[in-house]
Length: 297
Image (tube, rainbow, N blue to C red; front, side, top):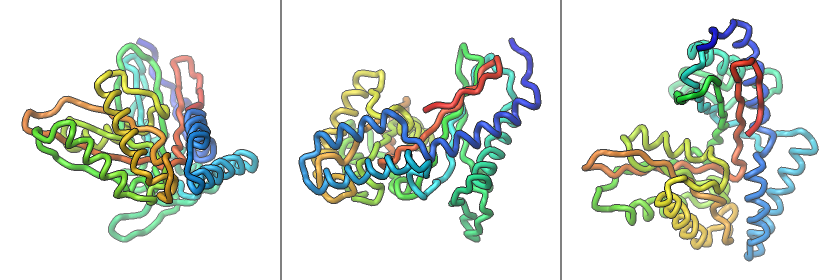
């Protein structure tokens, strides 16, 4: 067991989270860049190819000018993994994440998109009651902290779906619901998209799994062969729809379909869909026991 973290490490964490949030908004992950390059190469519909080319020019302009990829800074969602041998204080970590989000919003400055659901008041910090959204996971045989941020834009987040299917609906019912959800979304989530699918668990766990699925590197298959086969089937069915980039036609409606699953009750078959737009922004911060701070994807 290591020593407890010193107080100044949480201050460094807040500064690092501020950099992480801005990085995620400006720098497209390399796996998504590759997926978009491949989409351009295989697109056969002229309007789809034109739109994908425009997306690539948007990314290039953001790179050259050090600009945001999209003006929607999203709802800040963080996934925190904490090793079992890490002697950090989770409350202090949450405080640092909030502080870092507020620092980034004030110093960049970033558009604040977070408001009260009742009064719609915006305090211009990208934070509020219970926001940032922070999901925790505790990992065996590790002594570090890993923080992944997903600035979840509203266009894609609004296209979120959940249904308690019947066990008798089986995998066929799951496929139908996912494909209908994506096609029904049309151009609203800015395709080509990454489709996150949660299967099983309880209703709340299922929704979380769908969102967790979108942070996996684009096109990386689920380690379970049966689930990976389902991902392939869903991707083929979605792209066969012809919806295409921005919903205007093409063979690239989705860059990837990622499925996460959990055991569930014998009388339940929950399924959730969380869609991520083409600007699949994310960033990763790892803080190890030796006080090293590493920013990446």
